[in-house]
Image 1: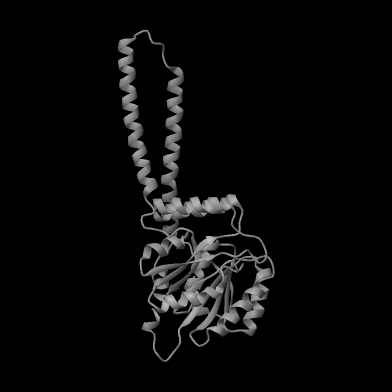
Image 2 (image 1 turned 45 degrees about the vertical axis):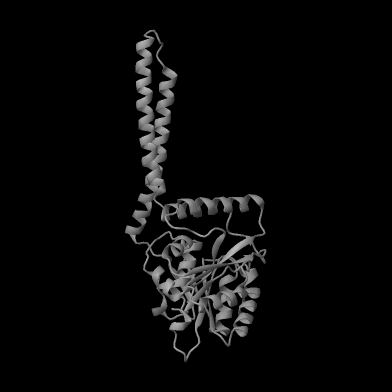
Length: 326
């Protein structure tokens, strides 16, 4: 639903989606910048601020409660436990009322002021506008892990996934409606949105340093997220398993013919005990690897059939019971 599809009598509503987990140190600064942005764009659109609290253990929820009491634009839900970052984003999309939804992080590494640029491109007809990270203030190992991950995911995915692109984006209501049709207990929204199609474009920017608190993403979590991306959006591992099986079968047949011919030429050749043991160990390891790949896909099928909720809402702010969609 681009602006051209809206009634000329009303301004578009843009929802700012913000997942939070122990972000009490950033909320005041974030709220000030969001309200300043709303004032600056008041002649073009209305804003609402939609928070999902992944069961924070600090003062995040109490601060959101205070903000919601004084500002009806602040809407929030609190999960009964930590359901994960991607589930938080998906829950935000489902509870946003806007004609367009902009996703940002609470740590202010992604500047909310870029909404003005995103908004103009959305008015021009783009359904997805995302930020492309030119540089980011983090250690070398984490940065290189991200770059390799983006490259690997893009290579094995069945559809192109933009590189150096996170979850900092603006999406049209039509995209949100399409996402809502998917029911997955372990979403990877970057790949999901990239695979939907629509008109998409990106804007390059420099990511800022975190304002306060600690990053929730370390190398192990990035690896888990990368595996989710691969297994959710690619059948390459399954095909690789079949290909490896064929290759090992061919190699085994060639090796068997070789040893038969060698035995005919040299009947006194001693039995190859070591080579047999190595081949057995190799076969066991290969089978375990291939079964692991198959198991990852079976696990995702099981989760879909089990129909787990995206998250469980414990409390909400400025939302009616009939608006809760999890």
